[in-house]
Length: 545
Image (cartoon, rainbow, N blue to C red; front, side, top):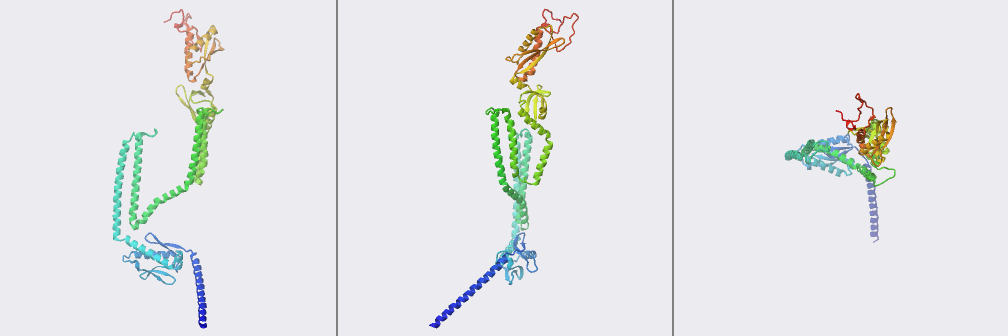
């Protein structure tokens, strides 16, 4: 009994010691394996892709012996190409062979490639997993190439290419037919839906322009159809598949670049839109305020209604400049040196070439707030007299009584004397005067009576403001009398002057009194009885034939 218990205790102790040794050994080996794995995983070696039939199968890393990664990749590519030339190829013939340090991928005693621990570590796999992965990739590539180069596949590819060409033929024929129909429809809509554009081009030119646009659209559609057909044909054949991908990339790459640029620019674009919307509503508010001031709905003391629209234009321009200053940093490539250089160059050219323009602008602004005249006023600018037809920021146009339109730069108006007849007529009544000479032997009371009669006969002369007469000067042989009358409409001054002269002749002739000024010469007959008065007005004297 004692012996048995001792044996059992001894067996338990021995088992515990052995198990502790095994566990300790495993931990030590695992720790060492983990250290090796960690150290290996942090090693980064040169990578070279293995290309097969215009496609990347896998990558090889580092050197094996004297062979660099590039040399290894070239060797593997050539061996895979040789396998694809063998129509008796069997994928099961590719085996894995363990040579200790290396795990070889072998086809009929020929090594295709070798996989070591470093190669597997780069793929985060064991050697067996990495070698099996490479073997599957090689088999798949070779079988795919053999399938693509088989006679059945080639016939199907040729048939597909022929089908694509037939479909493209009918599509192009349909496009041509549609283009002809569109030309006929455009021709029928001439003068109806297709009209001249704001007088810039007539109906015929608009129709021809529309046909040209239709032709351009047709050309673009044909180009797209041919391009897509070419891509489809190249895509069918393995040896031209990369050309199809390359041609497609020529189109997709710029589109992707534009798309990325647009998406990256969207926040700035949104900021610009917000700024524009805010300033647009501010501009509408200022416009509404200006319209109410111009129509006397809002009265501001010291601010005239005719200032409203020019002030709105000035404020609107300042708002636009301020808005552009805020938007400028958000414009595409606004921080580039080229953009800044062009901006500086444009500013220099504008400042050098617009000296007179700026002078006229400043003069137009000053004239606006000086209020020397308004639209429709009869004014005199220097030697020109007429009605104000148009007043802009740069020039002022007047129309003379002879319907001559004269354009005068605003800078010239600032240096010339301006006489506003209409303003005087509205506020006080415009005074027109007529100077007539009568001899000393005619009583001045009689002359005054006749001149008042002249004023009463003349139309458009104001009745409330009575005419008045000045005895202007004593000349050598006569006295100058000046008749002054009031009119309300300055545009009628020429007609009133003409009527005054007509009635003066009639009144003086009716009273048998000669007008001796302006000077005149008259040859009298020998007896000296004739006068300048027309015979029908001479009393008690027969009319001479």
